[in-house]
Picture (cartoon, rainbow, N blue to C red):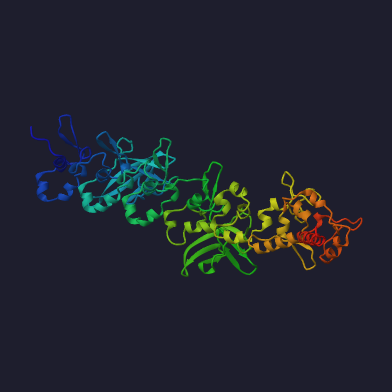
Length: 582
């Protein structure tokens, strides 16, 4: 018994096993159908291309089922074969259609070069081969395809109407590499080349499969499953699309989403309520793209979704056809239809015009939606990161509860980081310290001078030391309470000096400005003399200095003196005591 043939010699002699021949129980090769053994004459004729056409890659290279790259070269994309133990089994050919007119293969490529005829329960596909009949007419390979899954539009291919001979994907042959080696490489799926699965990093999954939730999803078994109409990406796509393929990767697929973090959500999706909505279960839905149009009676002005006017040189607006065209360097680069956003109220723009909202559509009338942020959106100087400071408000960044509990931030919660410094400069004392500035009851209700609850700001009563800071005087000497900003500190200090100087000791004590004082002192009389002796009389001096004193029934008390009057009175008393020699 001679030595068994090597896989390559077996392929040269008989062709592809189970396609051109099979091995019977006696271990002998039996040819299938019209297939013929290779003869010495065939070799001498030099028809090597025909012979190579029968030799598969698995016959000349050692292919391990665990080597996804070599398997891809020998058998095609991993969707076309199944590993059963140590053996590779080619899968049945499938086609997909959404409209029963255009058919696509398992990789999403449109089927071309086939005559398609409808038959009962399916379609007949005639593919022209590179062979010809004796009369020169082409030889066709006929496949019959029948619906297998109505939800996905999947059809299975057979060689016969009885569905007994399934069409399987062909293994790669040497001649395939000779004709177009790069197309073989291009057909290798990135998931196979990079060994990407559901456990891989998000950026690799995005590169190999596309956008999660759109192109693919993780099924109930924890495995990656492609959605209808999508296929895993190939090396060819990476080679032809290159940088764009990477730029199109969504941040949400490679970053951890924290729905409570406004900055993270802005980076991933844009501004909530403008670009996306989020339900109570934190599911994100992208909103329709829109423009705002304001007509002043003569001209139309277009604004973006933020209410900012768009430079007129960068667009064309055709109100008759209701189209909006985007221009770059004077050239139109894209045109859209726009339709009334009848579910939206008029929008007030940044320049205080009231504009009408319109949704953008493609030229077929399909709505356009804002897209989640991609890696490409982070490139350049004017990108989504630089937008954070001018788009996110303090309230969004810190959270509603946090700003409401802060006496400063609750008044600037609608300001952005960019506008915050100016807004803080405009904050007033009464805004920030209202709960301390005015007299309130135990429940925080504002009171008037009679201690009645009031919501009339003009009736509020200044509390304690705030009267000294906020009260100034007009040209007639009348009190004026002004709402000073935090920057007007010089005016506040000047008010304090004036009002402390003019206030009585009693008021200062009652307002808590003086604490270390025996309250009985407030009701001590201001006397005009110390003794009955003429030397003890102080009335003339007190009159000259404008200090009130008790005369008969008209009593003057220490608490009714100002600080200056009190100091002067004490000096007069000491001077008088000196005269008396006491």
